[in-house]
Image: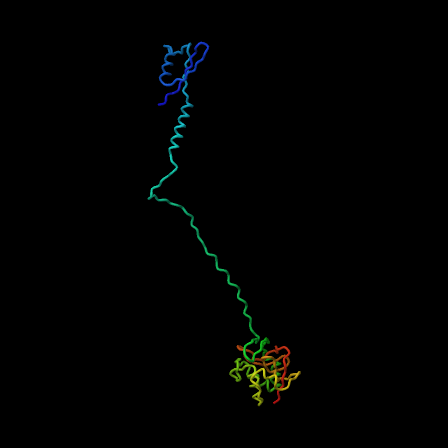
Length: 247
């Protein structure tokens, strides 16, 4: 146990002497200063004070010493189990991009193609239905009437029969039915018949790489290109040459 500090003050003449005493010495001195009846000797004043402040400081120092002895390292058993709470995360893939809108299918009503030795590069005219102009052409020209029999025949490169025609094969076949022989190459038609500026139904329309039969104002019948069939349609050629063959 810690001894409590006692302070003893004594009067010695005019001088005041303060001597800090501890333990048995303080107890003995105090006992000597007390009278038999327990009163304080008037000549000597002994004051015993318990310094709680000192005790408090000492206790604080002891606690600090104990805390300093504690290390900051915490060691866990190798087989210790730990529960770690982790949030559940749901990951979704980005949706695939929307497909590009398909281009609207264009209904092809033209007969333009560069294929075939007797085809032309600008066959863009629409087929012509059995209109009054077609009926008039058929009734007004034996050549056109014969040609109209083969509407719907497929284009066949090098073809010259109702099983399939190319452009020059069709024209030569129609005229052959009237005993007129014509070339089998579209390029040779520049050198046959007579060129005319005012065509009549049944005359031959000649353009580079293609021939057809004139059937009336802005109307012709021809075998267009691969994938198409023989048909009446508008005259698409720019500045065509008209050739008349009479036999």
